[in-house]
Image (cartoon, rainbow, N blue to C red; front, top):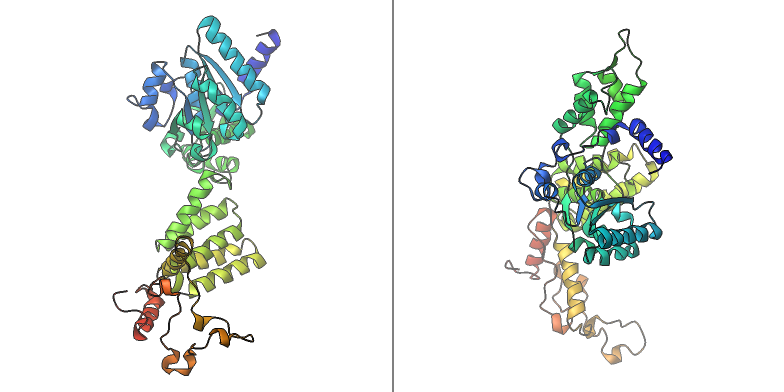
Length: 442
């Protein structure tokens, strides 16, 4: 390391953001994640014994993925190399592999390669690392905010242990903030006093993200003028200015997005309007496309409510059209009405099941011919071929119904749509039983 590099490093250590300066150096300094680094947990034992295998740390921003990698770097006797997948190219990877080979061959020293944002690597880049992880040239540690089972090469995942990090609790965040205020690496050299309600407020609004909480604290310290006694006092009002919106982990293309949408749909399906509106609010707060939300409500109305309340689809379609015309913020009212209606409606998936069963039959069974009496007879010579000759027009009979075969011979007794006893569908079932289409056992 030359003089300029030393100067640059020292400058970064002094001027780095508070969250970076306060990054834990040992396992004992890490806050949270007891489920994976508690005293008797596998990862804790492996770090202390310097027996690290390939790992993937997966979790929301600010939960300590890079921190754990740095703790390993401070603990291990192996070479530790860090690259970021957003900026690293093939040349960087080739250089890391070659130096790892040299270290193994000359010094018998292993290399740990930490790849931050590993999901940003494309498939070819991930495949490049695979043989060197396989033969032990590299021990890989990857960090990702995305579900590695979807975003990381399956072969790499199968050769790694996946650890999921959880958002920090409010108590944990409060502990980190107090440490930053007192520690000389943080704000300890400044006379900073933070009201308890300000600490509580920042910890709550950060929503499990340590980086967001520490950055807001630092912003308050750097932008607040000292009082007459020279102390910088951060009140709740100042804290509120520094973190104006609750931090919400929501990436429209990410794992949390799909989890939230899934919870929204399952809440409507499960007839819980309170949960449905809550997850709707989370999506709207994060800036989700209102048209996307409206589509999910329409699908749920058809799939999970169906004919138990046919009006549900009408409401959902009307809501979809309305939000396109009106936009936000008024669209949130329309979406709330539609989501709560669908959630409260009686449920039936009979229509959904009917089409899936029918599609499965078309795919896997002989389709059979359309019965002759149902075939088109509106052309010259059709009746000579027997088309439509014996067809009976239902409106000519009592109740506008007459029994006749509609399915092909091969499927004539098959039941695809079996209405439930819920809501409007109960009436449909009673009608079909009345005309003899279904018996009570169907």
